[in-house]
Length: 367
Image 1 (cartoon, rainbow, N blue to C red):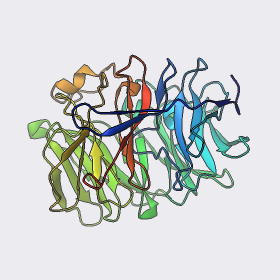
Image 2 (image 1 turned 90 degrees about the vertical axis):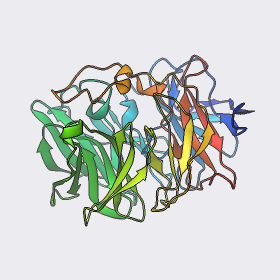
Image 3 (image 1 turned 135 degrees about the vertical axis):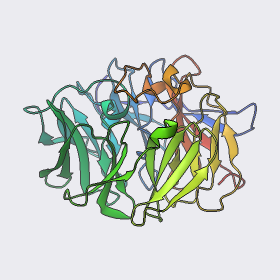
């Protein structure tokens, strides 16, 4: 059960009985598995490997499926890995992750781990299993800059780390910082979430031009959540739960409607021409649509059948009077995202009783 061990492939293929889509189950061990969070790529750009987290050794460790052989390779054997911090580089050379408040760069070929930065003298334990409590990180699309929110005694510090040298710069300190994402069209611009009541913010990589992009409509108790970038447009999409998705242009502030159904975790394709999402309350399956102005009718890809835990999603915005405790294990959510070549969508489902990683194949009618 050590790093470098190769496991036989576990892939099986079935068809979704309701849509006919081809589904490939990547993992089958009776333990928790999941791909990186929905706005973090699960594949390198060349699609040589699919990166995922597995609990099969008893703790969360980073694994990869070798797409040429189908074998599964254990990449880590380290205590304290922050499973939602995992971020594979697009060039396939390394995987970044946090472990015990140490920022680590894992060489994908040699499996040598380099501790880039150590926050143990300042970091505090995060609270909760959602939003800023998850510990997600961000990597610029050129693989150079790693953005990491660090929980400290009186809030968060937002660090940007040079993945080549490990040099770290604190660009921002405030009460809540979570879900950072570099703009796909500008490595100097970062999106992040603030408090639930004032959620969508951007900041320059050097800490400049810090501003709130969108202020929620308090009159109708608007629930703003799950913001991501739309590539090629310098737009940020965000969910107005459960009413649909909006997009806002960061330079002009222009706002437009993207869809009008209960898209839960919407994520764009790398070229910005398609968006995929899961749905909840009700679960209408994974859906795909064009997020650009005048986009087409959404299509249902498949039904993940995940338990999608988190009863608060069935209620009105619950955070108006401050944080609340919720129970929403993230490995029970599908969190779909596209492969770089648009041939498939990767997602997680615990429909079998254990969370497993799946792919839904896209054909010419759904791309």
